[in-house]
Image 1: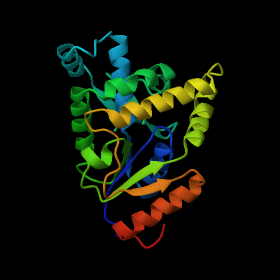
Image 2: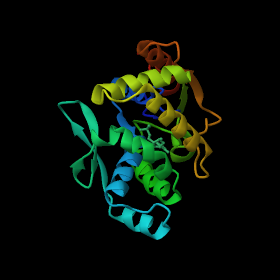
Image 3: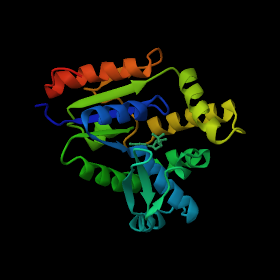
Length: 230
Ligand code: DC
């Protein structure tokens, strides 16, 4: 029987991490955790409550009032993000959150809070988690670490299509600026910046279809968990 492992997927914004992570989790019967959703939900809480993120005391106190949960929705067949009992899955995908989330995710106390929650979810293994520091900080001993990347233009196009469906007023320039800003902040922050873990395998999906990237990742899984076929 295949052994249960931890799979981490890190990489730049909008390079398809969650698409791959969800498919792997489904195939393997694993739990999928979107760690970015947690930073997005914390950002929503801070914005709604006018938390001054420069004020450490205020930030720490606010974190004590935050309860994050992933709840499975049988209709969408996805786990959705709940903030203090409210389903915020749709709201947190908006550009107004994307514009602030990297600043919030750069705060040490916020990261400690989120990382502790994420580590609890992995104690039984059988998990695929995507983010920026999952292979380096959250699960440094994970059995399979994937670092995803894709050309900038391809990433902008993909994210634009996604956001345009919700908001036809959005421009490609706005999306491009937001992606570049987030990549810069995420990879230059002091605490757990986005880095490829030394033992991570690189998956550049610029020219790969979703099926091709899935098959490539499953080849890696098979080598590690002992399964014979996909
Ligand atoms: O994956 P995403 O775009 O939903 O993530 C939103 C933001 O959260 C992203 O700009 C960086 C931050 N993030 C992080 O710092 N660490 C993670 N493990 C996941 C996300």
